[in-house]
Length: 264
Length: 119
Image 1 (tube, rainbow over the protein chains, first blue to last red):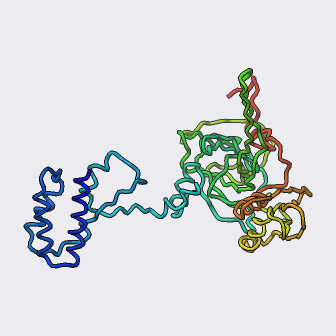
Image 2: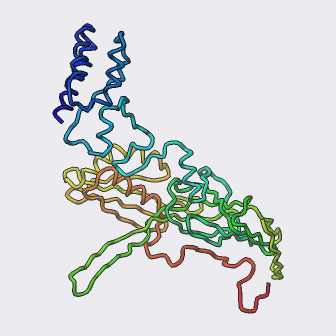
Image 3: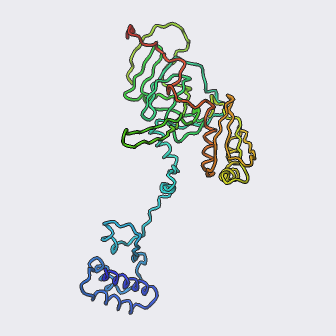
């Protein structure tokens, strides 16, 4: 280690001398470096030889970064091999992603990421509502929808409580595009596994917390008792429209049901 | 929250104390974030009340005449904003365990299945 430290101090001096003094003294330093016996100089040797043979000292300055070792450094196994050879500045900043790591919140700055995450939850955010006539009367059409890992059989005007959907506010219009089945009085469309052209329009009604459940753990006769409270965050969606199937126009009370399965 | 497009929270009362240390967060919230909260929710009537000697709380009045009181004692301004946003985001309904996650008035479209239904 002392040897390595010596080399490092010498290289420090070299570097500084390169910047300020005349070439002859730096050459002298280089020769002393190469003549020191019993040194693990192999990684540096090629470097030095190149420098020695090269008469002009207008070296790209960024090549020669020196590494200072602090006791607070994180010790990896790859440190040993890296210290002499590394010639690059470490620039790791993906400002988009690594900003709020400490607070635990991720900044989904590009909107593509939002829509990606929305695809995982099978929703697409539409616009906020302003005096749209979205709330229609009941139509005898149903759809089987999947949100996250839960599936619901849904009709016009229903309310659904799902896990909290991250990227939508209250009063947002949402389109659920993972529709597994559509049905009406006369027709049923079964998706394999999803119906491609079907869409279900919903409006976000509220983001609220569920009632508190107390998680109580006990092991008898072992003096072990734990109490934990938990409130799940939910989103309430109101279904406004189901698209992708022909809706019967007359709300006829006749109850003859003819189902013809149409594979999508 | 809004039921069928109608916002349910009518009034938000921010009650604080100008001397006590438990109100520090609320006072900071009132200076920094309350104006933007008011602008973001023009339909909401936000009132600040001075209540000396008492711990601070947020009181939300809903359209179904329900009152929800949330204590914001010793909270940071960000936490107070989170509480206020939660009050704004929820309906005034009583916080009870949900019976079902799917609330509907017309459970069946093609007729409820019985053992004698034929496809």
